[in-house]
Image 1: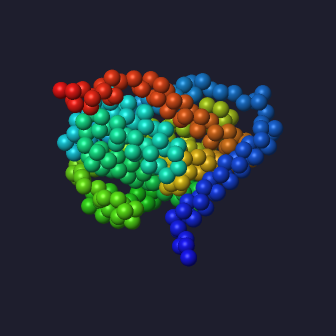
Image 2: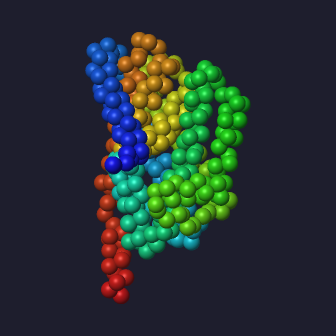
Image 3: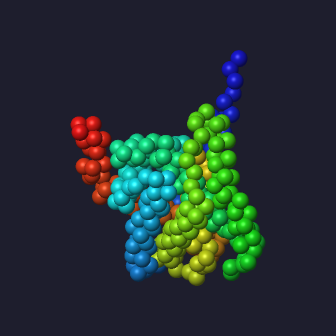
Length: 314
């Protein structure tokens, strides 16, 4: 008698939910488009330009944080090569399971002379803290929607304190080793210092803040209504966290758009409800354009592709 694979069942359920959300968004968008008065819809190009200008800034910071993590493990990599590796492997996240972008970066890092064990450990740590910080944004957003608070509240700090224990390297390593053991993989062998943890978390807070600001400016560039800037600011990092948690959906497809749409429907006037889905889709298009630009402009590097071959010859 065959045993049921619980993991596959759960993944299938999440996949069905994600696909259902995509279909629902497409269906609702079709209906909403007929309701949108395109004569009224106008883009404020100052906001739109500022939104796009933030993309390379936070991306470079994102790459520098990984470079810093590698340095804390005794491995040196230039910022441009960090940008190349992350830019080239970003599309691995569109493969279900969220593992191929990790595998790809590990393989390419080895071509730069970085041992697989260290590059893998650095990617795990990097991903963990990105998710850790974005989860803080998500908790604040959910609390804000549930309670209906329209301004910043000290209770947000209490919510964030709940995450503090998970910032300690020993706690994280124990959690990750347990997960990796369940997946029948070898545990992460390298850790980082407390000082490095603080610096990485601060860097990730700044990075997510810039992404939140980018989304806020994007929405404000075409939505003709006064809506909560702080809620918009929290929305994209929160949507990313939710999309990442649902591992089976490539790049959070459907899940991310679903949360963005839900949040905007809570704060937009009823007559502008169609713009909630438009904002979610425009955000996806904007980030995909950014990822394509990294792929196209950073793919050429003789050092990246030929370093190992040169070493073998010498």
